Length: 303
Image (cartoon, rainbow, N blue to C red; front, top):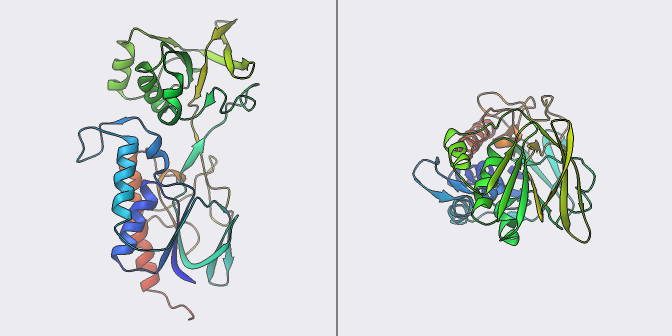
């Protein structure tokens, strides 16, 4: 029985762990990976204290900071179910079961599937959801990036330096995102921005060879070797059904990071807190831990 279990090892979870360690709390972290979405980001120019840093570098610094403290860590372990256990909570993974008096859910989000023919068949055979991870594989090749928000713009900016040509396919009427990113894209010579364009299918043989789109009522086949899907994210909240969520599946929290169940707190992209940013997730992780510490300090528990 732990005082606290932190689920997730992204910016929110890592920050919560640092605060918990400094409070000398008896806690466990369970995470599928260290770094979370931050490790997938490209160039970061808006994290206070760093005028410029890459996502993997920032994630590495987070991890280095956390590893200065000694506490139990279940890495590469996914949570499948969270349930009540008397006045405490049971966290079940594919490898074991753990109990705690309080929880912080900081499990982040995962890429939303496009759900078009060929997406599943060619996953890891040309279809990818991470330009930072897989971009170098497509050096000197033509690629398509599907999406119109900041994630898609970030992926496009990364691939402009690597690929021969980038097709940015956006189902909306215009790209959405930071003005600076938009300006950088529009000044590039090796990108074709395709707004009001719907992706129909992905084709290939052993690997991806083309993508079919519909634009202006006409279908078009575009020869590409890679397809980067940046169609948004869905919260990793399916493991818990005892807290309130919004229609997007995000866990509802108040200004103290508390959920609708006493003793369960949540932080970062898995919550309904607006504006999914690394710095916001980190701050929410700190807040969640302080709230969990206050909760544990003001409640009596059976030994």
